Image (cartoon, rainbow, N blue to C red; front, side, top):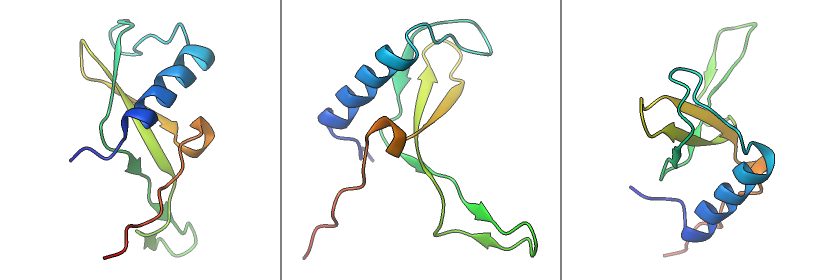
Length: 89
């Protein structure tokens, strides 16, 4: 399922070029990255009760090392990517 638009992908590429132009994979040292086609979301955990809040978290964009497939996560909102309005049926 592809959820990022071409505009989102271009914005992500531009952000990485500006903020982390020398980003290398922490596992293998390779420097070429692919963009995950679908954003992900962390889940929040209440440290007092241990309860997991599945509907609360931080949206993330994953970059995948094109050599070893290690994934590095970045905050989507801080990259300028915002959730779209839901479509109405």
